[in-house]
Image 1: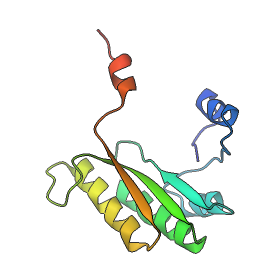
Image 2 (image 1 turned 90 degrees about the vertical axis):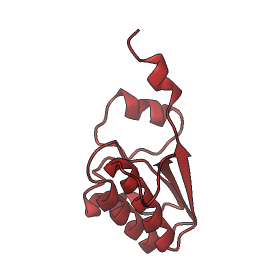
Image 3 (image 1 turned 120 degrees about the vertical axis):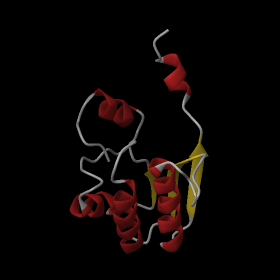
Image 4 (image 1 turned 60 degrees about the vertical axis):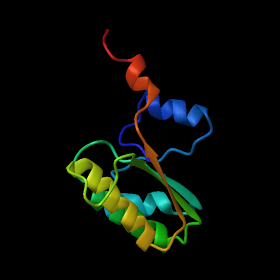
Length: 120
């Protein structure tokens, strides 16, 4: 699911991905995107709304009886995190666990693209 039909969406299509358009904070969009899906990847941008989006994603996934969710989380994800962002990642992991759908949470540190695109 992407928010806009741009060159990034086209690159995904070029690689064989089925691209749908919508908003992860709109339950109707998330439900529609899950129709006919067996496995889904959840990756929310840095910012507010992660926990709410995870709830909607998990509920829509449960309604569609998904086989698997892959969740992009954060290495510092824990219940006592000082950062709201990392605590939200921990909460989203809990939501996916509660859904009953097998979930793999990838706890990343950073992406190499961040180093490559940083100003010198």
